[in-house]
Image 1 (cartoon, chains in turn blue, green):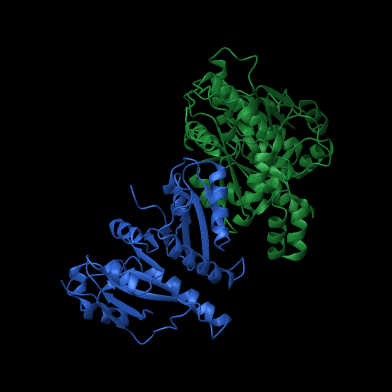
Image 2 (tube, rainbow over the protein chains, first blue to last red):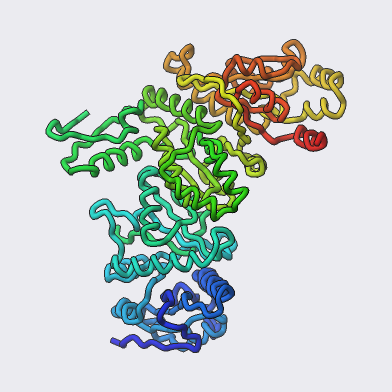
Length: 255
Length: 363
């Protein structure tokens, strides 16, 4: 078993205050036959949106330390063995990545934990379930390639992530979630209500208006004032998601 | 209804005052507020129709409720002040707005439909579609609770255009206070109208939904109105006589009248024609003996029954509408909207067709 190896790039940020976002390399890159670099994958628009938020944070305050810090993580052996290709593709596409974690299936969650990752993003629900069961806050990368990508970073919280029927509140590793959510709220507050480079949305699929109201209040208790709210009360989600176009979605991954 | 006699069940106010009749009540031996949360969720799950089967009516917060004071804060002090004002007053419900009685009447019709057809999804589906940020969400939910409205679906778009969501909800009618959004919706083929709060409100029925429509440029296209505006009344009469047997083209609200007709037929099928809780009216400046014939022929050809057709031959509409007391009256001309509002009728402007450019020229 190859132990995970982490490599730092030149764009390392001040570790204290950043929001560390780990994204799986299989969602960032697409292998192209015959090419000596990877092509842009489904998570590219997300990376660009994160970069834009950082740029605007620095515009507001050049000494800003509350920035998004992007880490690329491999979660299988195949990608783990393509580390140089991953690093060169990152440089080739001019991506703002501070660290690489070359893990495999068995130990990627451990490397997320040792690297103090605040948020883990992937298109693979099994990976997300694994990570969230071990206390790492995780969200599903959305990949609507139908419409042109939006400039604004759009984050979606589903009702079932915020409110669970049995214990009232159940979040993946409640402590880590609390910390992440309050820092996300801080980032959002750096910008005004209108023309913000990021937007936070709440969506409840089932349950009536009260459940959506509760979800809005739960987020508020963590320091996040949601920008948008949608209460579907059983109506189909897909048409609404197509208009919403979130980059990633917080939801319950079990079942 | 199965009830555990040993338990004192505490239902939220909405359930005791509703006319809904659920088929099944779960007997649950949990404690405290978990019972009515689960019961309420069950009710909602059973009774919310799929958008494509229902007649979806989307209303904005500014027409469902009165938000004049808040609007002033927004206009004078900007959005941040507006939002903190809303949050500070979160527990203070808004007063009813111009679309309020219309929404209540839709709910009354739903109650009657559910009693006759308990399994059917052919109902009115109400969605609150607002430009507001989710910051205002809690106050809106508290207000809906306060007024016992059965609105479970909403979209708070935080400033983005609501049009995409209107389409996703298969919206049959969109009511807003913002003429630009209404025009956008019309351009996308969604029936829409701008509503205004009249100075005084005449009382309307709580048991029968009454909807009145203008003819030209509302139910029908504006083709004849164009003739009238450009060539005058005589040419208009001539043209209508010559084309009596040619159907008029459809206007933006034709689809909504059609949807109302379909629901009416469900009452007729159960022998409730006389007691039907939906009544429709045509209030047109056309004359019964001449230009009105083409309108009636068109409606008949479309298979649309309208309950009462009033041909005013150019007389003012205000007094007639005051007698009809509709929950909503659709007209394309602001002149008629203002006249109706002066007499306490709730009128909605459909910014469609030649009358709009003509109105702009008058300014």
